[in-house]
Amino acid sequence: MRIVFVGPPGAGKGTQALRLKDYLGLTHLSTGEILREAHEAGTELGREAASYFEAGKLVPDDVVVSLVAERLAQSDCLGGYLFDGFPRTVAQAKALDAILEAQGRPLDLVVSIDVPQDDVLRRLASRGRTDDNPETIQQRLDQYRALTEPLLDYYEHQGILRRVDGTGSPDEVFARIQHVVDQARQASG
Ligand code: AMP
Image (tube, rainbow, N blue to C red):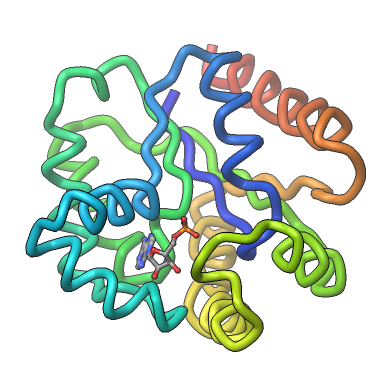
């Protein structure tokens, strides 16, 4: 299956993505992780990206899209994958659709993990990542609302969006995700 995970920072996307990856045997594609690794390795991409993510801003679409296009061409993506943190803008979603259309392998499912803002703030405050200080947290939430939330409408129109209640324990949330994934699997035969 080809799946996209959407949700505000702190919704538990990363944790749930890793569980779902194991459940379905998919390749996990986290653009945030790829960008942090590039930064740690000291590459030019990493240096450019860090100036954005350290400020809680989205890395420019063309940078992220070319990184994803390269990654999708690798053989471990043939059996299906799970995007975690991509796309984050409608422009990225359209670029992804164009890539997948050319491959003849469209997305099967978009899972939105819905969590109220208070929960998100509490979770982020306890996570301790370097881009999790109060100013960048607010900035990332603002960016999520302005740039990423419109994706939900975009995928709703395509009929592939499923919304999952992201409150409760990780086990409870994962059970809800399994449920929508199993339904989508049955529907696609
Ligand atoms: P994440 O680990 O998904 O929270 O991503 C960490 C940071 O990497 C984000 O705050 C952005 O600055 C950057 N980033 C990750 N994925 C994307 C994306 N799809 N588009 C733009 N920026 C991204």
